Structures are given as C-alpha cells and as structure tokens.
Image (cartoon, rainbow, N blue to C red; front, side, top):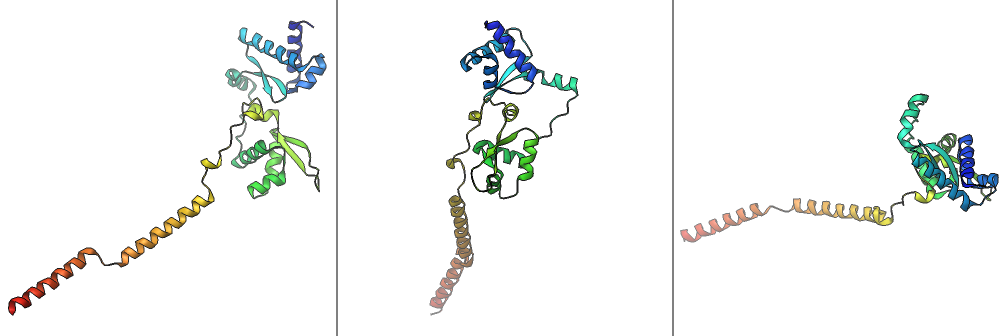
Length: 223
C-alpha cells in the first residue's frame, strides 16, 4: 500500500463514518499496525494544512474523527440552521466532573459524593452522548458503571482524559480544621470585647481621682 493511497483510505473511512472511529477498527480494515496509522493520519493532517483546508482530524482518546476546524463552525451552523446547544446545568457539570475524574463509576458513587439522587442527571448526560456505560461492577446488584465518551473529549477540546486540568490539592483549599479555628478565634474576640465593655472607661476613673484630690486639698486648706 502506497502512502498516498493509505492517506486517502483513512480520509474515506473517517468521512463516511461521521463519528469517532476506534484506531483498532481502522487498523483492521487497512491491515496495518497502529504506528503506521499514526503516521498516515499525520500526513493527512499535513495535507489539510498545506491546502488550507477547512477539515482537520481530531484525536479523541483511542479514536479519530474528521471534523471542521473551529474557524468555520459559525458558517456551518448558519448554513445548516443548527440550534445552539443548551448549556449544561450546574448539576450536570458537577456530575460530569465527578465521573470524568473518577471513571468508571456508578450512579451510587456520584450520589454519595453529591448527597442527592443523580439518576436523572446521569441519564440526561448519556442522552447527550457525553457519558456511556462502561460495563457492570462485579458486586451485589451488578450496578452499571459510567465513563466519558469521545464526544466529551471533543466538546471540551481534549485529546485524552489525561489532559484534564489537575484538581486543587489540599493546600489550595480551606480545611474543616481551619474553619473551626477561625470560629474559635471569633468567639474569643467576642468574649474579649464583652469583657472590655463591662470595664469602666479610663477617662471616668481619672476624673474621679481628680475630684478626690481636689476635696483633700480643700480640707487641708481649711485646717
């Protein structure tokens, strides 16, 4: 198989699919190894760049997908009258974050973290193709585990889950101990303020002393 032929075959597969295609499936169809596939995909991408094409090849985990470059998305959307996607709700973003950083996990795991029922949110994310089933856990009840999809990577402009930003460490967060210490300090300050308010003011004390001294002086003069 010549290089140009291999490049064209990959382009045809990705174009005809319209969805992310696993590297294993492409390799099996072309009877090549993964190293050769990576090389051919890079050559296809180089061809698009040299021709100033509006197309690009996205690497989404262990999949490839043919897509339109971000510079042309608005024109495609206008021509196809595609409605803007409804932004994800805070609850959906929260669930998606939990699963993305801990996948594969069950609904029970998500609900344990959030403290509320999350079944409807998980099902909604599955419908949006941002989550998918990842098999069942070998525990009583065999609950379904969930993981993110190639569509999730595409939406968040990631090539793999490894590109997710790191979570804040304990040093960047306020611990419960710090919160308790702060409350105790506040209580001490309140007690000190209350004690200070009960004490007589210095100005009044000094005035009383002055009056006493004046009375003593008058008595001595009279004598």
